[in-house]
Length: 158
View (cartoon, rainbow, N blue to C red):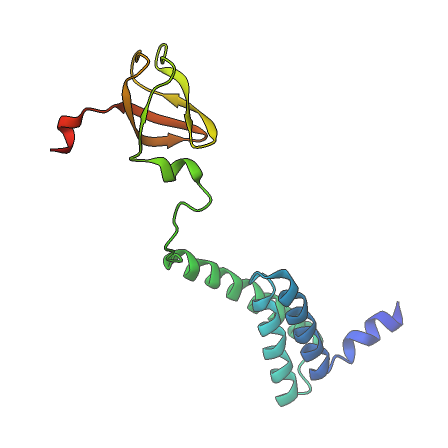
C-alpha cells in the first residue's frame, strides 16, 4: 500500500503527458470525441505541474477530473447547438426517403392497414379508412417502419 501512495506523491508532468498521449492514441481508434477532452485535460494538468512542480497530487487529480467533466459537457452542448449539416438527411432512415412518393395499391387497405411493395421491399402502411386496390396513394410520413399514406388525386398538383 505504501508503494501505491508513494506513486501518487511522485506524479510528475510527464506522467500527465503520457496519459494524454495514451488517451489520444485510444481516441484515434475509437473515432469519437469521448476521450479527446480528458486527453486535453491531462495535457493541461501536465503543463501546470511543469510550471509548478510542487502542485499537490490530490489537486492534480481533482483538477484533471473537473477539467475532463466540464470540457466534455461543454463540448456536448456545443455539438447540440450546431447540428452537423448533411446532404443526405434520410441516409439511415429509408422510410423517410419515401415521403412524397406515389404508389398504386396492389392490395386493398382494410381498416386503414395493409402493405405495399416499394422497389424490392414490402412496407406496412397506415391510412385513414379503407382504400381499394388500384388507388394511387402518396406517402406523407413515417411511424417507425410503417409508412403513413393518403389517397392521391391528380388535381392536387395543379
